[in-house]
Image 1 (cartoon, rainbow, N blue to C red):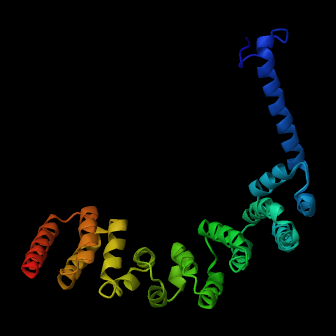
Image 2: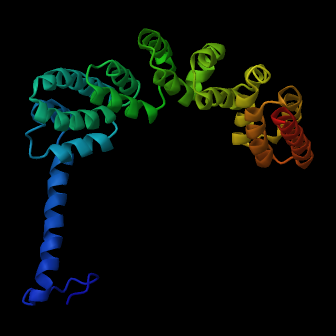
Amino acid sequence: MFDDDTNDFDLTDPRNSWRLESILADIDRSIEMAEVRLRPTTQLIDSLPSILTDADSDRILYHLEEVQLEPAEAESLVKQVEILAGAWEKLPSREKARADGVLWRLVKAIPEPHLSKIAISFLVHPRKRRREMAYKVLRRTDIPVTLLDDLITLYETTGDEQLLHLIARNPALVVAADERYLLGEIATSYWQMRVVEVLLLEQPERALALAFEYPSRFVHAVGRREADEYLPLLRRLFAPNRNDPRFLGIYAWALGRVGDTAALEELRGAIVELRERLETTGA
């Protein structure tokens, strides 16, 4: 057998042939990838109309994802994606799934601010697959603040709360938005908490202004950040909410995260009182 650290290959030994063939196949693939990398990026972008039948399609897509596009190249790619997205809608149904997969590899190769803008344009697409792909892309990117109004307008048009979740994922968007509008429109407690959490980190005074209005969300955010500097405020929130089991649950969790033995003892007392009241009512 041959040693990988040497150049001595015994080609006459049949036991080595399969390993050598594997190495040569890898070299072939490296050469093919190198040939694609050596082609001008503009040439690769111009070739995209035939990407579905191009033998180098995977290599071209991989290379476009790995390079940093120049502004003119990015704009050219955006135009191609817009053209192809429309043209591929005319494909037979059996071919659309593969075309969509190629389309979204191209979309992911687009840099900001173009990426979010083109992904948002697909959020109202008639086909569910494209809408889902758009959300998948947007959940992984820092959406520019310039697109905040577009997301709000789209939400008010469609009523799709996922659009507000996209805002809650992006600190810059939350800071730029009206937090009371977001909290009033978002129905999911977790995403309400995410809004408060962002403000707790970026602009604490705005989060503090929400503490008594959204006590559970505030306590949850403090616990997630292990922000023990807010312990005095947490204890102040306990008094008006000591009869709310849902608040007490998240409060207990948060105390464990930030550490306050005295507050835990006080919480145990509230639990005893609730149990006694339940027993009395049941009797």
